[in-house]
Image (tube, rainbow, N blue to C red; front, side, top):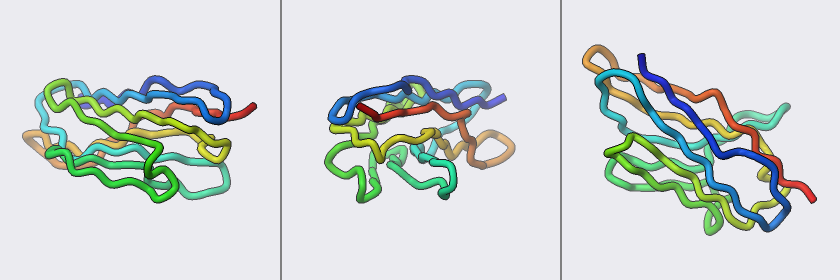
Length: 119
């Protein structure tokens, strides 16, 4: 069974950095696009960054120049390096993976990891 697991959240002061990691495991599959999204209560979940299997990336305007998504296709992992963090980056961050198995292609979500940016 395919599982998506995030790690690396926590609390940091404004201007600080955090690195989130996402790992996909379980069975025979190919990971296509991977991405990070975030959610704040009362708001819709928003895209933060995505990376195709070939390394083409896309970022939300609010994080361009501060966040970097990177892939390790051999390990089925995607990291999100977050620098110059701002209080408005506080959210639950979710990893999303578009996965092809021998039977189906679908998106999988992780359980989320909390990021708090506060002084």
